[in-house]
Image (cartoon, rainbow, N blue to C red; front, side):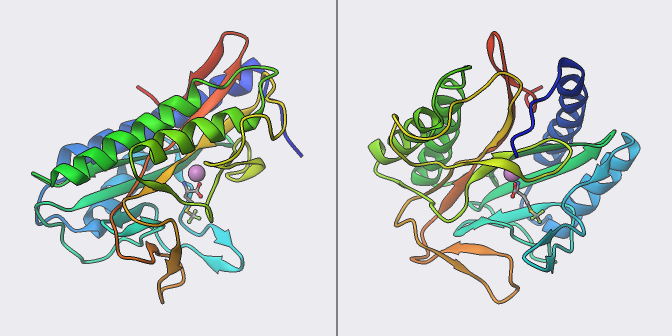
Length: 252
Ligand code: MF3
Ligand code: CO
């Protein structure tokens, strides 16, 4: 079922997503070579609790598996759902930071990919194109428009740059639950898909690879990596569809 949110609910979701954005901003500030992803996880958790919210991913179940940490930290060829560990970041790495909270019963969800110190030109371009794909998608959000317009805008932005778009993970509706209907694919035909309506809130999250789009899951049961070992980037915003078009809830 697709839930339509009232103005009051969108207001609460804005506050949830501002907390997510503030956490991501803090993580970017402390990011440097030598920092471990577990340290980032602890910082995220502490700041969340201080803001009277709860980490959304810790203890979250997908297909009977329980996610063990608050943050998803995905390095280089890791696409999403990298589990924080004692692994230290190195100069030149790129890291996807995906974070979510629950605030007053509503979820916030957002992700960025950032470089650690100086990164390769290709890595820079990948991150730039992936973020641009996200914004091109968001621009399509309008009452009465079809989902496929968003999907196709994202796909073409990535593919025109010579990259590929991951198929096996998609975005989602978000609200009182982290993953609600409808799925939000990052590929597809513009004339396809359901009609978007005012009051829908969508988490839009393109994952873009330098090489092919095929995915492998690591032995930990969570970490999704590119099958060909190529670099991957991920950006995500939670966005409400209003009468004035898209309202990016997770942008400060
Ligand atoms: N932003 C991701 C998503 O929307 C994070 C989920 S991680 C999980 O799917 F552990 F909570 F599943
Ligand atoms: Co999400």
